[in-house]
Length: 187
Image 1 (tube, rainbow, N blue to C red):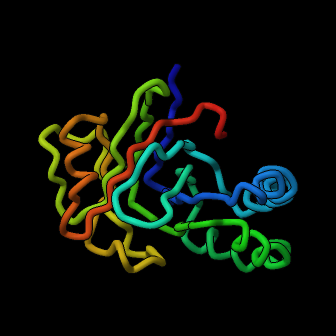
Image 2 (cartoon, one colour; image 1 turned 30 degrees about the horizontal axis):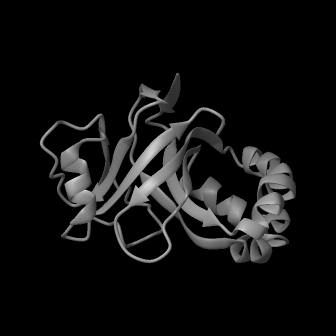
């Protein structure tokens, strides 16, 4: 099976990843998304593609899932985060995560990627890409990125290989490597 991920030069592509605590999953994937999904849409959010995180570099709690979201602008993203309806639930939302990272914007171009849901991919955030094969996409971290830990880096997507596993185990130079599998149910 495949999923299509639409990139657009006139929108901001955000990636986020996290792990919801087991006892909070029913709330997060029930009432929270039922209420906040329409609010995000009012602010122009569109889900580009969701994914499962199979493994990740680093120590500590690793994310279990993630998403690429498309926003009209960084300001629209900020508008959602200051919307009174979101502010009513943000504390409970944040407490539901064992770990969460979001608000990471990359500059996109017009392209539709067709991604196989039966194969794993390497999502690499690094200053220099060090895998031997060319990436499927290589997107520069946006200048209006609200997170500063990725400035000067890019986000690249590759098919998963032995070289990707070696990089995940020993990423070096502040690289982050995620082994992901796209999820057709995450729309």
